[in-house]
Amino acid sequence: MSIPEIPFVHQIRDWGPDDRIFDTLLLVGPLVIAVFVLVGRTSVTMGLAATYLVAFVTYVLYKCVH
Image 1 (cartoon, rainbow, N blue to C red):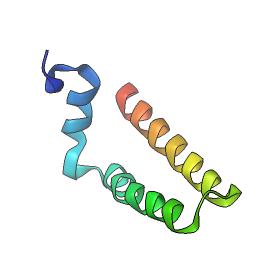
Image 2 (image 1 turned 90 degrees about the horizontal axis):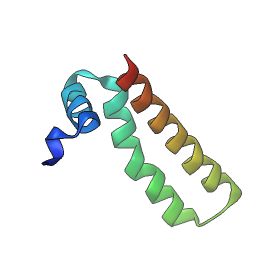
Image 3 (image 1 turned 135 degrees about the vertical axis):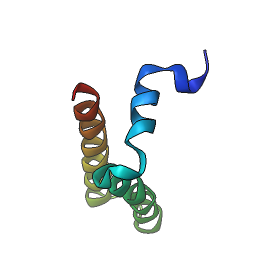
Image 4 (image 1 turned 120 degrees about the horizontal axis):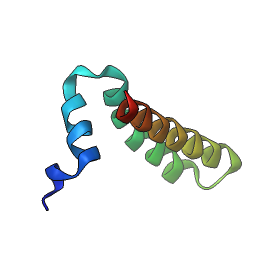
């Protein structure tokens, strides 16, 4: 089985450039990592990372259901 044959991967790939929210989440991810690296492990950066992960996973699950 190749990666595009996995059901969720195929759906995510189809969203692509037409989904502004997904694109924004993909662009914000490296920024969250950069803030985490530059500032260090604090309660604020942990909260930022957790919020980002929850938002990303929630949106992907939402798109998979609809």
